[in-house]
Image (cartoon, rainbow, N blue to C red; front, side):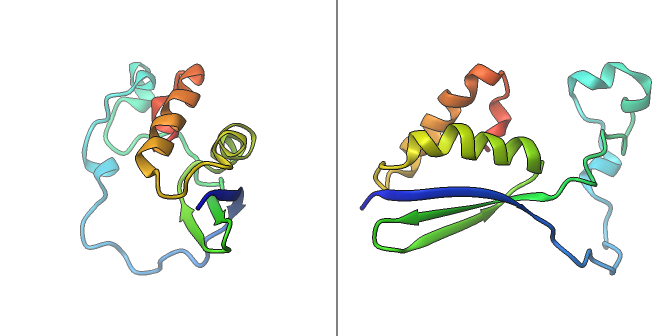
Length: 120
């Protein structure tokens, strides 16, 4: 069975949780090793570039027989664009069950952007 259609779009997950977490998140208690950390305002626990106003990317994959899969990720605008404009045209028509092959194709297709984490 082959992939018939892949569509990515932004969604807003509301309402946000109102219950405080029992433990702080890892971004609040650990230093992150990343290029932007060379600047003092980003080189401390809890410091991060704010993407809080971005919606979440969602992706719908539909097979020839009408079965479908749905996933949600982070960093809406760049991920939605990457899926719709770059991954979808290359994955439509592929075997639905070849998950490892799809992942490998997406890693290799996104290498031109120098961002290996985009596909995950």
